[in-house]
Image (tube, rainbow, N blue to C red; front, side, top):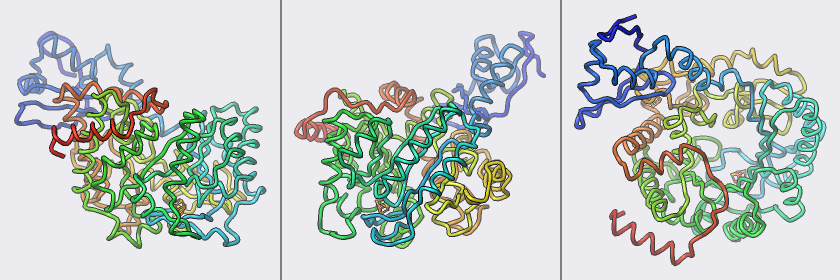
Length: 500
Ligand code: SF4
Ligand code: SF4
């Protein structure tokens, strides 16, 4: 305990520091992401126990120092920020089939051909899986169907939803469902079931026709446009039927990196205000085509920054649009709340936050892990209990490994907002233990957090919009969707203003 000249007791908490030398400012961030921006003179006063009342209050309110007055609040904030550690597995990913009627260039799922046999989940396995899932102590859970193309086994989706709801009468969890789909097999009958059960529908939409069709082809008719199909479905079910629980996501490859305005235009015109500029990941079929699909992290970041500038420009013109990963980072920065988003989790979600149940009942630590042969398989719904897997050595290793405490992050100021993927590290570098700052993911996330903080602190015209992104992801269908001509006029204005 120190005593400063106002005769008040306090303890300095551990902080990381980001310097803005040209502005003579220092950003101090504590271990659970609360922060304060100080002028250099203020920093010196903090350092040399020479604070006045105003500075003391500022540091106390932002948990840079602990005092008898804020000690309880600090404990509470620390617990809230790390809620995911003791929450129980809440994202339950289920593969009704590994078959798919598409062949996408970056497919990480290692999908099988649509007419291959032996890759579908049986009702017996589905039942065992749901029984297993309900052993999780999580109070709220999402059961997500992925593939292959999950709509090929809609009977299993129906069975799981109905059986899970039945079990939940006893368990009383907050239960949600989502389907990740290419959209091709969606029809009115399936949609009625989806709507009745409020199931989230997540489509893939890679951008305009040429890009989408280039990335995503039908296996049996590669010349047919998959864009036209998915575009029609999104417009029909989201805009005409008014189903708000529709989402879409593009995967950004070397081919689409600089087409961000065209891709965002597709999202705006489809009434999709949440947009994710998702970098391609080193899994599944993407590994084969890596050289032709991926870019240097620096190239990606330059494009991503242009995306943020463009979206903020649209916001100022009254168009609701936000980048998904940026919004999750901002939730941590602005509201000191961990949104539980898998790619930014620390520790990562390996079984403590998510699990993947393959079509044959195999259990993997997470979605990415299933592409790694047996290495990340931790059990089977027929043989293991949830309790067995909480003691699994691989899960424990991954959790401690991804806490970032033992790696070369040195004093990286962005540590409280960051998340790593041990499976990706293993896949790319052959080891769970890697020099994190040299990885693609670190370079990308570091630059993202850096850029967002800089805008928040130093760009008063952008900060209010970014704060709004950090409040929530607003997926409601916008009241007004601009016409193509109106959007093109905005693009022109943006280009002449920013030269991009
Ligand atoms: S990314 Fe999805 S739709 Fe495309 S091939 Fe893979 S499983 Fe099928
Ligand atoms: S992984 Fe990179 S961005 Fe994350 S804390 Fe470590 S050095 Fe910082």
